[in-house]
Length: 387
Image (tube, rainbow, N blue to C red; front, side, top):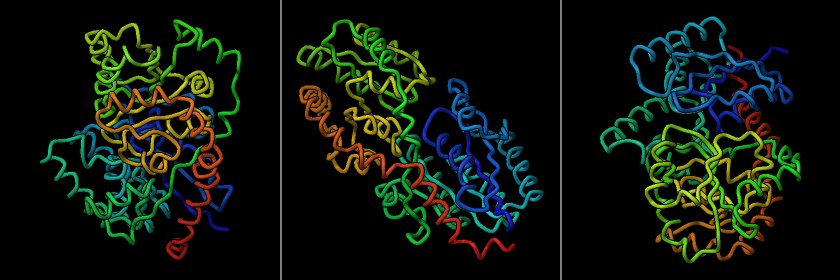
């Protein structure tokens, strides 16, 4: 049987949901059909770490293209485009599947010029608001509409994101857009060391009854830690004793450490950096919170719920869909301080919500479901593979 050649392209393999998805699909899709996949990834910017332990754990061969970078650069962008164009002409993939914006732009344009039979793009989130000035956001939307015209199918990861792409920002017509939620090997979260969980709690707590509130993500402006810090300052006198454990790295760390100090929160903040022992971390925490301006579907919330850890988050991006409009976790409202205080005061109820969600979350965001959905989508284009 002829192999279906899939060229998978992602802007960077930093710590986050897209890295898990491309590594998983590259490793396991061949079990579902005659696929041969090449994974090409760009370069992480300064301040972001490559997910090297994940790459090793998946055992996937990755081809790195240093000129493919998130930040615009005419020289590097043209170099990356020409390299991709030459690679596609030589290898002749049946499917180009791009993930994240820059890879999607350069990859889809090159694939269209080469004549790759099937071109697919996944929006893991989007940057149509909250990232750029109104003028640049308008230009970005125009570019994405053009790229959508070159694309056979666009994957979004939540129903709300589908409405954004189709209705709100009018990037692509509805017949081109399909909802395929994220998928992870959530069973790996069951492999944890209870003794290490206890040690983490002792390390991070000052007193045994202190609530460990966790924040997990990239330290970048869109995550709005400033908003969270202001809310915590406002409620610290009224709330049960707590500390905020910050898991992650990014270019905003120094600025946010300084902000925390200026707000008098130094004693409440525990900066632990990147952690690869997430099964233990999530069980050491009493809850996970996010106060972002924009999100796709946050992996941190999926993994927390899969462990039965309560979550609270602002209702942006795919978060309301993930939490079933508040069925599985708390949707934080304005004023944020009051909403966050109520969450901390009702943690037993929030814990019941999280535990009730586990079976649903593990099924909906299963890696097996993701692989089946992607295989079905690819096979829907089977007549194109004769080329």
